[in-house]
Image (cartoon, rainbow, N blue to C red; front, side):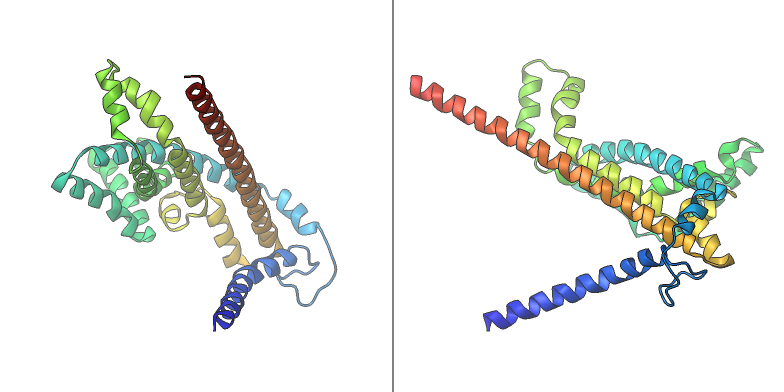
Length: 289
């Protein structure tokens, strides 16, 4: 019976992985097919021309630059707001904590289209009410940043808040008793403990921004991002250049993931070596005593 369960589990896992990966494999293969339609059937020969066409597409490069600009801005602002919110929520209790937590989480539950429309309407109406032509009150990439931050900051907050649960409050109290200021405690004790969560939050915010479409579509003010660019290409007639773009994005994502994992393992090995050295030093000190 146990063997049957193991076999079924392996079959299910294999089928699930196949179901998840086969569309990516087909899409990637279509990027090398010398066919005007993005498919692998019929196969008309291997070619690099779709990558060349993508490289020569000025609109795509402009959309790429806009996407990176928005993603970096969203990451920075979301990390600041999310980290501050997590520290604040962790420092209070009772009804106030529940209200703050619910307020931050509520934006995650709102559909992206609603966030995009409401962001655009709010800022344009404010501009009309103030009778100003200031760029902040007009649709553009800056409104895309503000709209995305409104919910991505909540995701960062959840990651940082989870990390805060493992923080030893005794360290903070001891530092304050020894004369450290709150700013010194924040800089030298709390933030170093939160760095892994902050880094993870920044990465999540960056990729959430890159793939965002609903908010950007309603707030961009005519500027293109990669998601809007792909959407317009699909509407006007899709070509394998979209497959080439998708393959490059997958490759960059995998490369970043591999580099992060290498860095994480290296840091873990260094930390393990330090702990082992500390244990050896403690054992040697006990032996001498």
